[in-house]
Amino acid sequence: MKGRRRPIHLVLDGLPAHKTRGVRDDVDSLKGRLTLHFLPGDAPDLNPDELGVELHQAHGRSAQPAAQWREAGRSGA
Image 1 (cartoon, rainbow, N blue to C red):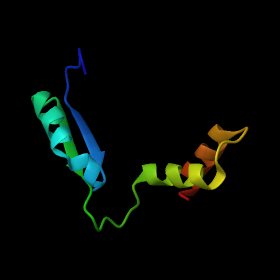
Image 2 (tube, helix red, strand yellow; image 1 turned 30 degrees about the vertical axis):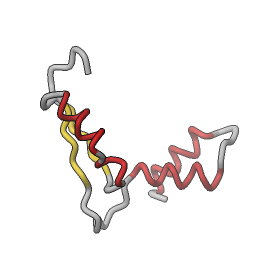
Image 3 (cartoon, rainbow, N blue to C red; image 1 turned 90 degrees about the vertical axis):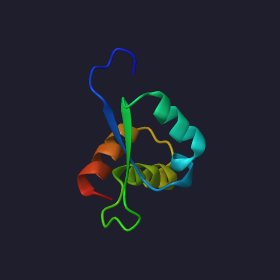
Image 4 (cartoon, rainbow, N blue to C red; image 1 turned 90 degrees about the horizontal axis):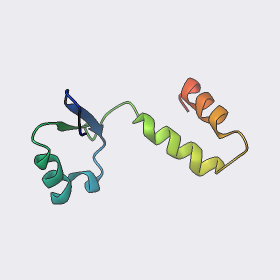
């Protein structure tokens, strides 16, 4: 974050680890340069990061991971 002029807005899911006292203290220490935004618990759309985790868990490592990630992004699955 050193040298950044504009603040960073980070969107997170409701995982309890994202809301711990340590995380809040770290964000507070950045004095407004980082703002956390939490998705609602009943968000109808999946967090896009979750799609990648599912793909990795289902297929593990392979010879062509980049192509699989791109295809998963296109298909939304």
